[in-house]
Image (cartoon, rainbow, N blue to C red):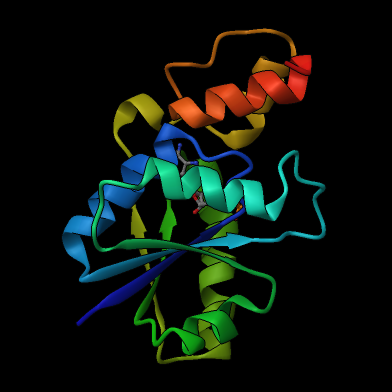
Length: 160
Ligand code: ADP
């Protein structure tokens, strides 16, 4: 029984995140999407909103669950008996930070591995930050985010 946790801010979830989740769902017995509260950045959506949008988007995947967490990732991973932390690697620019994070997490608990997956090429340049930038200026991002996120972005930026 291999269990993976996929942590992130998911502010908001994109089809890149969902691409990774569905790949992971085929590889692991159980995938837990861990939505980090993230007190450093100020997220556009609340933790509850981010969890709810991901739950709806991952609805068809039986072995995927979505949780919110605000403690240390390694502690959360231990709580759920996780075998590996899953992270996405897009371009080379992700590499250095992800390498540091993986080393730190290994230092904190050598028993928990980090696994990297790459998304489909069409999502390799996608980030939540870019989505927010474009949506805030009225651009169409509907090809890159799940339907519930499109609605939430409209509400957030146009108050409708
Ligand atoms: P964080 O604040 O931890 O970077 P994100 O929600 O931005 O949180 O990302 C969570 C994880 O998803 C990270 O491992 C990131 O590399 C990965 N990720 C983000 N966007 C994509 C994408 N378009 N394709 C694949 N992986 C992605």
